[in-house]
Image 1: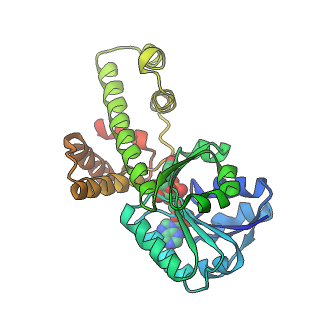
Image 2 (image 1 turned 135 degrees about the horizontal axis):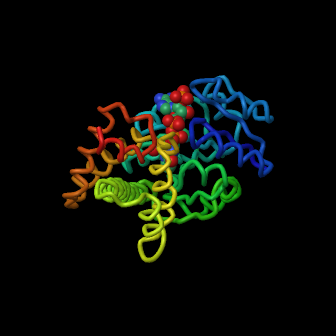
Image 3 (image 1 turned 45 degrees about the vertical axis):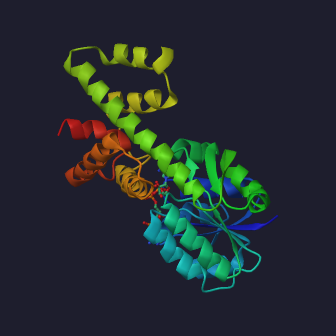
Length: 284
Ligand code: NAP
């Protein structure tokens, strides 16, 4: 069994690490805020003093931090040790450019790199049903299939390093369109005086039914904005989407507006709430 290390034990990283341990892998962890590792360490994980010592200790290093700058900071730290024979898997949502830079640095330190962000949120992270969007060499992906399948139920190979991040940005543009659409429709139905239960019954059945409508629609109806996917991360992702769209000359007229909507929602103090707080932003 390969030794696996997880760096970044936030909403996603902690349950993902737990599933790796549950699958029988020897688990080491590091988190900047050490106390977030307490539960995993009580369950048997080994806490490393820093990212460099974690990298020295394990065969596969999984990184789940906030954004591109954070990833590159961690890469700098783990490259202080030899990465010969090791694989680094970034599962955070970052830019394709940051993924390619990370790969280059990991290769220079002797290691292999996979760009493997995830589709799915807190509940799939707990259930082990994430979808990995993988960029990198297929044989490297196959070598890491065990730990990846401990955390998810599908691996989609998208191409070289950078394409996993591209796929993630594409899917998060769709998610943002969807969330804003749901928030506006919910508010519109309510303002017209329709019953929330009736609206949810219609929206969660027939052609419009989608797991997201049920999950986020019911959360909005219950006034539950506790973070599964914090709005500040979606704001970060939309900035990455818009940057990428500029580079590949894709016209995103609605995407541009969504970028402003998210920026303003974060300014209103909704950054740490779930993305369904886009509904709250309409009402504040
Ligand atoms: P989170 O709860 O905010 O956790 C972020 C983690 O990154 C924390 O452990 C944080 O450490 C660590 N971190 C951030 N910057 C760091 C740095 N410079 N050095 C070291 N550690 C750093 O976020 P999350 O929801 O788990 O999301 C993590 C990533 O997954 C993000 O890229 C997000 O866009 C993506 N994602 C999230 C979801 C979701 O539904 N939540 C779904 C798919 C993808 P501290 O504890 O010290 O702050």
